[in-house]
Image 1 (cartoon, rainbow, N blue to C red):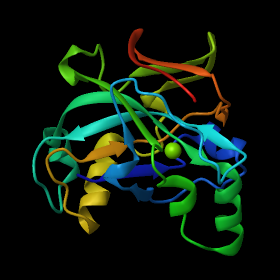
Image 2: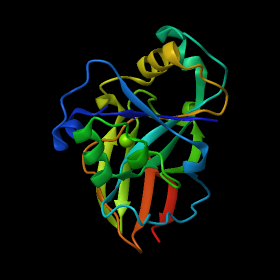
Image 3: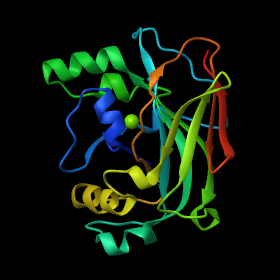
Image 4: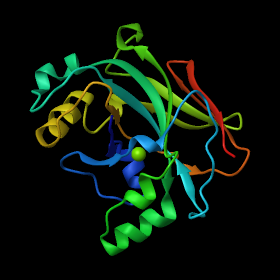
Length: 203
Ligand code: MG
């Protein structure tokens, strides 16, 4: 299983980090060892002083595909979830400055927190999915997938041009504005269309 993450896919988030808007999807990967499931806690790593949450809608790939055409891309995922793309922002800034790859900032153990999945048919409109993150009882991120720069279908078509998608692969589709740091004992609750799919602690 592999995890593909799309960067800068909401204009308001790209702006808050002073990044230019991408002309094609920007993606990077996390290894399987990054996954945390079942509402288990996230342990803050010792190598960063600024770990940020990024709340994202996650697609679970349900069949093998290569060079998938955009018009057929919807057939490659059936379940939608929510996850946190934890990012060591201080290390990421260094990587960007030096032109180095992002793995140390993005792919570390525990950096892909994953909530429950729901069938996309259960959603009122799969092209306009509302989601949010509450941090210690305060809503800090609110997004709607109608604001995506690159749709789920565009992402699947683009990524599968380069990399074969396999059953069980995950795609983190990007975060809206409102990212910020976490500290020990923070409580994070992420919901999709008002339904809590993820609820965990930072340790
Ligand atoms: Mg992200």
